[in-house]
Length: 79
Image (cartoon, rainbow, N blue to C red; front, side):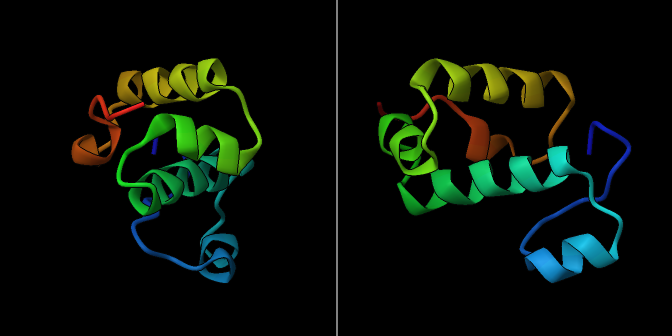
């Protein structure tokens, strides 16, 4: 991942911790998994995460700049 952490894929929180994941890695994994569960609906994902849609968009843009491999999970989704 972009912060020198680990690739997260479908790892559990315990596995992320064991692999030395950073808070940024865990945050990214949570956002991507929430987007999957909401079928890429950013408005629903932001609400579920307790963040604004603007914050979610900023995080997604940051992940794209970091070269995140899950491009399908970060594509423009329905709001």
